[in-house]
Image 1: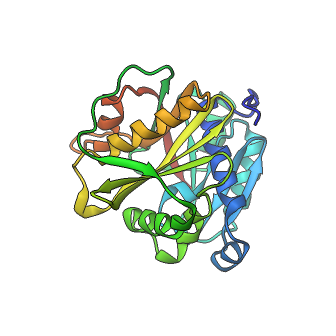
Image 2: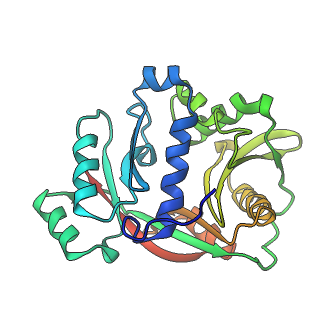
Image 3: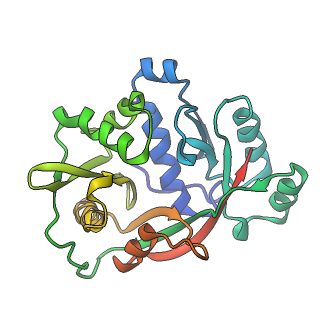
Length: 268
């Protein structure tokens, strides 16, 4: 796979690999689900607009990875014809004056604390021990369990389980379980393209949180990524705010990830 991303369309390569993963997620989803759930994706110069109205999360209802007014206009006009949540994610600190003026002209308002993008380069030093949490690859015949667990962890309708089930065993994707004994209690995925990899799908069933599951899943994914030639890992999580610390953010920092930049979420 080609790891070279357009500099014109992508102010940050860290956004490029993330957008590519979501375009592929849509491509792999079963056609019947795309039709029934109105799951749509519009790739634009390497970035994308993606819409899954029944998913409450921003991640599946947003415009991502675009840096020009022309591309933003195209994506946002497409997005406004969709139902459900609709957002634009943008690193405003890296945006051109033209894009900043465009945001003002559209009267777009920030929503929530925004997302932090973190990166880590290989080779990695020894990661902090995740304790006694074991992990393993998800088997192809466990795809539906993987998708169902992700829906439970993210509080998605279980009807959306096939979205995440579809990536198990597919080219570019590796999926993992964290285990309590032999029972899966957490999920994590990694999407690899060239020397870049995106970490996503990390969740833990509520009854098993605060036991080191996230750290164990980070470690197994970076280990497998390095084995495939990955030199840069990227991930995103909610920006910590005053009075509302982000456990996910702190765990990633403890595992050696560096804060790259913040993206604001604008409501469309």
